[in-house]
Image (cartoon, rainbow, N blue to C red; front, side, top):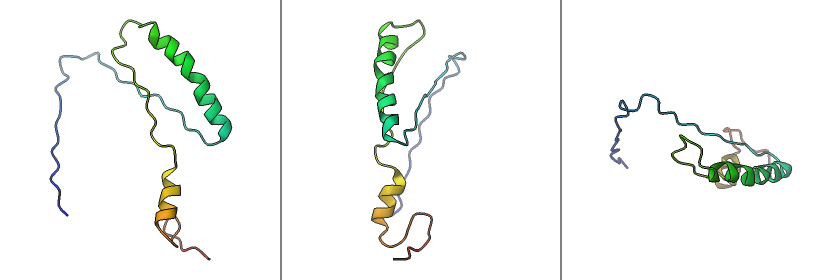
Length: 87
């Protein structure tokens, strides 16, 4: 299955001071979810103030289920990392 990849780029040389910042938080425990959702209203309040220079703000979730969990279930008897399960 050979699929052709079409890459596109944008010339940003006219914007030498443009900065993109991605902030993220990794949640490893249930208490981390509470902390994550606790930040939501604070971030929303900051965005609602429309600070100078903020062109765009987006909330997004990378994954709700860890990739290792999905791979472990799809892979059958083979554990993540290529090790054989003992069961």
